[in-house]
Amino acid sequence: MTAEIIDGKKIAEEARLEVARGVENLLAAGKPRPGLATVLVGEDPASQVYVRSKQKACAQVGIESFGYKLPATASQEEVDTLVAELNANPQVNGILVQLPLPKHLDEERVLNAISIEKDVDGFHPLNIGRLAQKGRDPLFIPCTPYGVIYLLEQTGTKISGANAVVLGRSNIVGMPVALLLVRGNATVTICHSRTRDLPSVTRSADILVAAVGRAEMVRGDWVKPGAVVIDVGVNRVDDPTVEKGYRLVGDVAFDEVKEVARAITPVPGGVGPMTIAMLLKNTLHAAELAANS
Ligand code: GUN
Image 1 (spheres, helix red, strand yellow):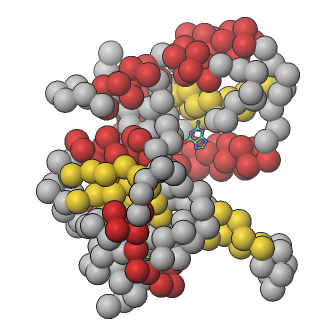
Image 2 (cartoon, rainbow, N blue to C red):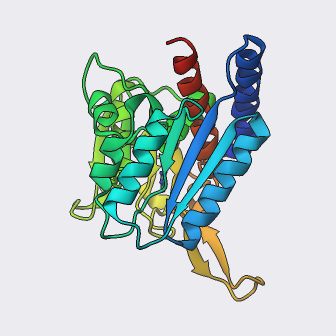
């Protein structure tokens, strides 16, 4: 069997068009243009690239973006003050503080300071807490996990009753993905560095989500025939045959696993494009909440 390759680029593009239409509808109803504030502390090269991509994507769908940069030496008070200003600014519907923050800053304190109505990353402890509780709903779902579920839904994968295995328990991806799968009535196993006999656990998965940051760790014989495999990993591996000297691979050995799975996301072009599309969706949602309040 050769798997269906899940086209994240195309699905993300459709989601972005839907956001663009939502923005048009708001403006047509006389509401203000949605706005997203991005906060970048320090000069981490990957974070700079991510923030620029987020701003560019906003422009494409008619969302205004406000970029704030603080030096790597910024104090906790400076970051707190900026977040408080953005909370009070009616032009700003969503606040995104790019992670990771420099080590001397208290990440939890910063995330806690963001108004939950503007928490388009979904990382506020209250939004995460609601995600983890029955009968409660977060205002926003973290973007990459939201993208994972969106891809599963778009490919017609039944989550309810499925055995789902999540590799990785990070705050940004693994844990919220697992919570979302539980909410979708899957039976969920979360694996991590202490998990014993990982291949036998992953082989039980109807849905396998890999988010550990280890290049091509998941091999063909780790996967149950017919499983749906979502690869969140983005890893650089040396490749002297290309000009850059490296290429990007996921946490899944794509060429092996695509012969076993029913459907699989490629890297790049799978989950990656979904993260920004879901951020745009969350920002539109924040603007709609503000417009109706
Ligand atoms: N760093 C890596 N992923 C993310 C994300 O989704 N949001 C933010 N703010 N920082 C990140």
